Length: 104
Image (cartoon, rainbow, N blue to C red; front, side, top):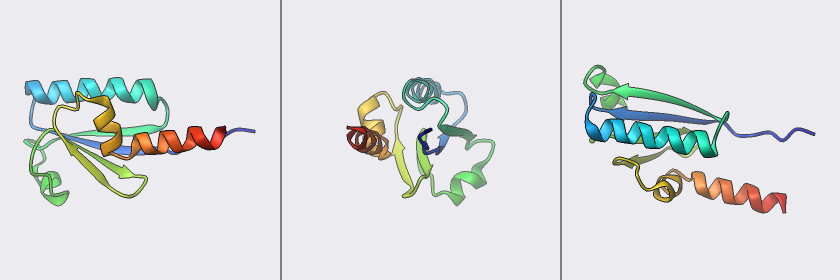
């Protein structure tokens, strides 16, 4: 019997090709490929090219990572270098722990 897995929809807002933007994207991709392979969709939005998207989503600083689905929406600002803070801040670690406990 196959187990249904949630799909996480994420948006990463960056401002051009700055060092912080590059680091955030690299770090996030590492986290997602290690722990969420096949169950995420990531959209990278450059606020310099698409300022209206940042305004619509009330993005005040970059880099900002936003978890759109599953609800509730969560946001975390910074270079995303602390894996645990990223996962906890987006409620991803909580879901991961809850699912592991359910399997036991």
